[in-house]
Length: 338
Image (tube, rainbow, N blue to C red; front, side, top):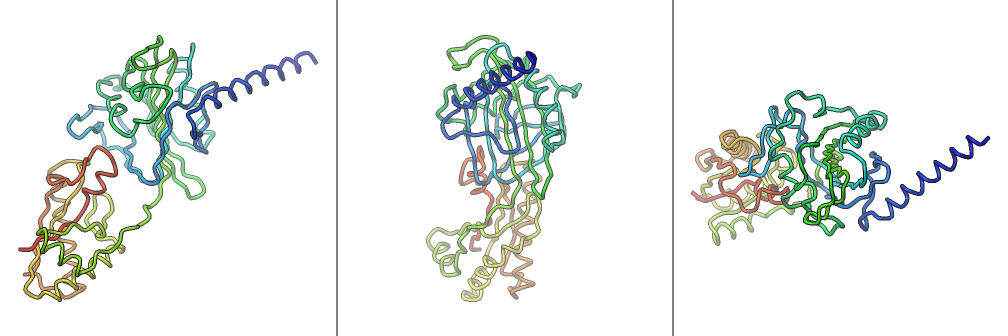
């Protein structure tokens, strides 16, 4: 029975080591319920958002676009929206990036995930110049035991990344894992020798609509005071120009405005964020404005000569496009008197 005692002792040591690692986690941090952590690793960065939009890589990384601060890939990434969890783990010591990465590759299928992209199986992968740049922009400036640039400052020599998807019990979840390796301690980046693993996880869900409908009288006041009114209650699916049913209250108020002021003519101007190609977004934003005009004409009897449609894509932002909060403010429809 000596072997049994030895096994129990080994299990006890491993359990204690993992418990100690968890105790050193950033205050308030915790593992995502669907994902395990690598043994003896601790959380050094933790951030959650109730609703966010994240691009998930499914093909070879091409370059980092410094203008819009977005990664670009050979094929379009999957865009997932919902509750977002961001976790950075630190696994110090002799651990290697490949070791941590392979552990996740082997473990994820047992947790219900299908791997959509694995850089270790991509013969074109390896040109990582700029890939880690996005880890140095906004959204990661949290109080941690490590520098906010501990991922950004790492060498790409031992970089590995994957994207996985879980579809179980009615819940779809996307995950991106990126592992990097520090061969030595680094005081500048407050990095320890070992591995840092960054997880971005999105539990897909529709955004709860909390917008307060702007009344016809409020629209009139804003137009008279500032020459325009920005509306956020007119909704479309990503990359589409079909009005969502939730747009009805806003359309009703626009119709009330036009009926109350029979001499008023409006330019309906569509605006997008900077995601995607500019020329495509110009066309998309105009089609969205045209959809608004068509609905006002067909559903509310507004004559077409009182409405004109324009699209300006992201050429007139009202907030930064570097984060989802700003992009949400930039996606809007504006009414401008003719």
